[in-house]
Length: 424
Image 1 (tube, one colour):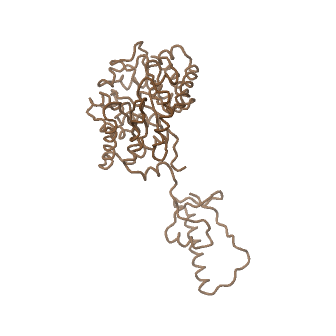
Image 2 (tube, helix red, strand yellow):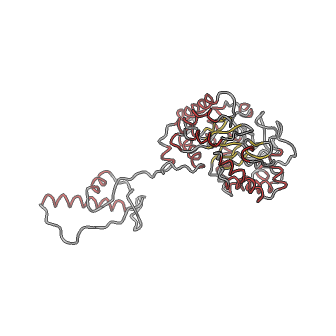
Image 3 (tube, rainbow, N blue to C red):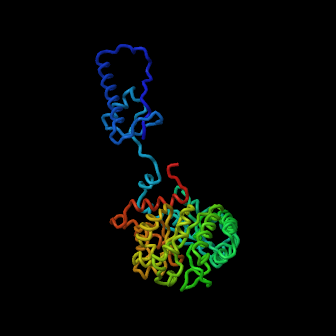
């Protein structure tokens, strides 16, 4: 950090003559202060003093700092304080607390209080399941959010895609299947209609939608065990999907809801539905031409979050994409330049267990690969599953299998998508 310019604010008149020893001490102190200032100004990688500088912040050698602090020649010089950022704040958190922030826990929208203990323990998000939301969902979620440690906010997410994939249409209004929107609505109409729904979602305290689906499919069938997309896709035309996806995304944002663009790198043409077993996408060389452009368009339009699929991508390795550093770190983060939140699809999917991973082990592998938040399905003991995931993550950091810096980075993305600033 730059220093203020040196100014001698003493009176121009000569000071009273001091006894010999006092004069000697004063000369030594002054000399040390001047030496400290010269040290700061040297071209050694330390910022030089600037006419427009506004405060202290340069770290001095201990002896120079002591001399400067006792001298009238260098007002304002103090030891440097590390600039406060979310990263520096998170570095002070325990591994367990960081791990909890990377987990989204499932809960029925009719009984959200069921995850109060997990929210109190610091999970980063909750995922609502169901088909009919209670009329007082907003007040229930407000109460749930009051248990967040430090009142740092909470990602409350659901699947509100349209058609047969709607969790709370009784509260927020219904949208048609994306295939209908892509075929019959202009991008402006998509955005307008989605905004209306999003405003009501936000009013009910739901701030994240796991949508839009930007897979390029176009098959005129309902989604099924063998086809994860069908009517969930806007079109089989890449250009139509790109425009419709961005319009849907912008509609959510205009209504105060965070969109999650899915399912990277595209499920169109998949061999199977990964929820029910191992599945493969089209070859990577094909996806780059057909399936990736809608994600590229969304990123250029400012997509805040992207979900990665559980499908294996031929040409990008043998693990599901959600567990692949090549898919996430190399392609999505590296080559495509995505800086936002990366979430996994549900790690309860049969494709994950078929690949040899338990849910906790998959969570660790997802974080190692570059994902920031993991999720799993409703069913079984949510509290026990959450604890197992957090323990697996903390153990992985302790053993060196997962770097602490990667965990801090993931936690930082979770806070950033909610615009949480720990230093405020």
